[in-house]
Length: 236
Image 1 (tube, rainbow, N blue to C red):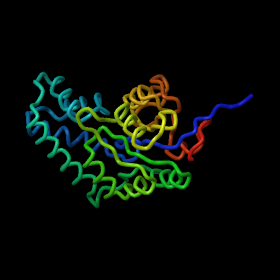
Image 2: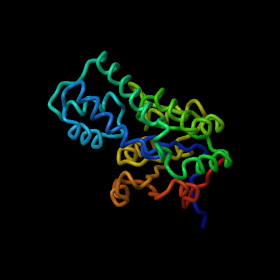
Image 3: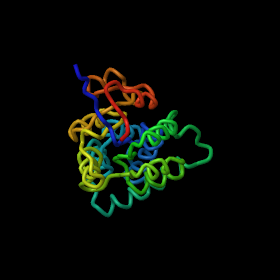
């Protein structure tokens, strides 16, 4: 009997909550931002962020306003608030006093995947320029560059899930079944499955049982576990 393996040539990582423990900072900053701009109570804004986390920023901001009974923002307002939000995140996450932003095992796992010959990508719903800046400042950007991969963020019509997967397959001559995506939220599972890639969930942001019920093909407790997934071969 022949055992079927997934031959993985590229690994896609969600950013917030997967490679870096940035979600609490971003949730807090969103509360501050919407309080300043709209007078909304930060607790309500933060709860809405957590509910809708994982979608592109424009969609996230509009969802927060909708839940607070307000109309969506126009493009000029979004661009202004998005720029301010990115600045807040950059300042907070690169503050020398901020310890433990990079999740345990991130560098070790990226280094080992690099040795195995996997292309590495960040596939994030966050602003691409912001993620690239933070990846470089936190010492993670080089892993993706050396692997021949990229740091990908989201903008209108282009985001993690099908958009990023189609782009990677076209630009790097890969098939969806050669890609593995690691995220930490239920939205990541849905997006990975819709894109037809092997989808792994990192427990922590969500309960392990919830991730299994959500349909993740594998659930791991630490990033290093991705190196020994049953039925998965990594590298060329």
